[in-house]
Length: 253
Image 1 (cartoon, rainbow, N blue to C red):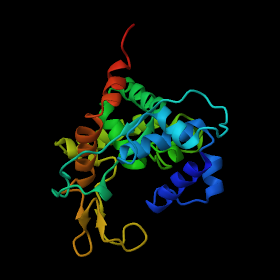
Image 2 (image 1 turned 135 degrees about the vertical axis):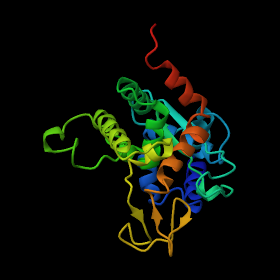
Image 3 (image 1 turned 90 degrees about the vertical axis):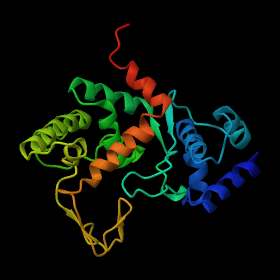
Image 4 (image 1 turned 180 degrees about the vertical axis):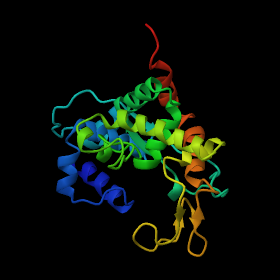
């Protein structure tokens, strides 16, 4: 069994899906929650097709697991044929696969409905910002300090603050005369220009578009808004687990 465990590590390492040492791998995936996430990621990438129980037995059978709470995750598989921003075919390296914590999704959906915000749009913004990854568990919208998020609200629920900020951004969009959905969503990311030097270093492409010689003016071309809508309509809304969860939240039993 240890041999298969090592083979799994070597495969992930060669695929570029894991970069740490084998000792780190052993420690990290002794945690059942992390193991379930790994299974979901490999399943989304098409690297493993069997159940999570089969995965555990095949690669981790006989290996002591640490105790953890029951975990529920949603595997997100990007099956888009065409990128709506670039209008080009989506290649495997560009696919936005992911594995997300259903509890985190439920919290975002609950808060979005509480503030009268479309839950799928809220989830899509969070997915674009952070991929809803564990590293951003407390701040899935990557909310930056300023305005709603400040010293006096430092200990507040950042999802709640993000919903309030989203409301503020929607009001800004209306004040600026923005009408289309992509223009309104763009307010979250701003209406400035993106060039090859916008992120501190020279980059060639942003959202799949070449900005080497032609910066993107998001005031006239709301590419962020279009990306969020693409994620929402063609990735999240086609995921049965997410749809079921969104439908469940707020239902009266």
